[in-house]
Image (cartoon, rainbow, N blue to C red):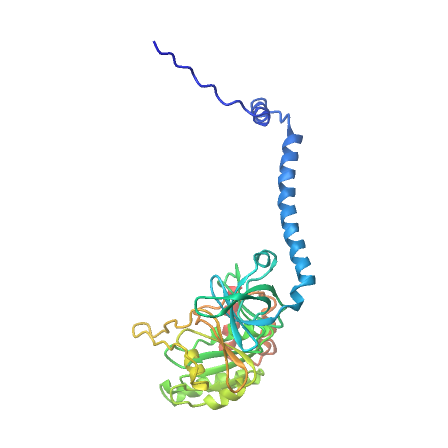
Length: 345
């Protein structure tokens, strides 16, 4: 007759026994021990983080200042294209940098990077970004009107060219106002370009738009009227962006990429069409990308947006961006724009 021996339950550790006893009696007999273990765990995490910071600081002082200073032209999911001394480098970020940096890498950032001896699959030399230099300007937007999360877009640009179309899609002056606020709060000079003026329904339609542009000019904002298809106003626009780092922004389908091609025909930029059903733009630019201009300066094309949440602007500080509302010289459409934006903050 076969005998089966029952397996003994694994013996509880002293800590498990103490915790069980404490639960049954309601008396935490070993609080000091538990706190010691928790404190040790926290100290371990802090020690690891401090070690990373000390390692990064040591490398900054002794090595990073001597590395090449490049400029980010495009950011991909796992790497970035960095321009330095007439050559493009495909770079990843040093792991310690991603842990100590307070912001994500964006187009226009000036970076110290180490050049590696290997090349990527597309033939570009590879590198490792060690540090993001301080930014002189930065264009950011919030993820929504509720402004729960900030999205940096472009760094170190001088001006922002806000492109709107008269029709197809219809101009939204409230969106233009939001972009003017974002530009000025980030240290950029706003410039407004009304594109597709050939789509005017009648002379009164165009005259109304020109009155709006005239009001922006009275606020110290330069404006342009263009048509990329027949090159109307393109030469004047070219003079405005000459020698400047200019961010292009606007509603989807307003013709930002077409304008870049008009001022610099040699650039290989995809141009999208307008949806026949919605009369809205189709996204052709999927991420911000910098392009050097042959006549001096550069343009940064950004994805079209339908919403532009403001970051760092409060209901109380909004009036600083509407001096015409404050002094009573604003037309009715500007007053309404101010109140709509204020209600969303």
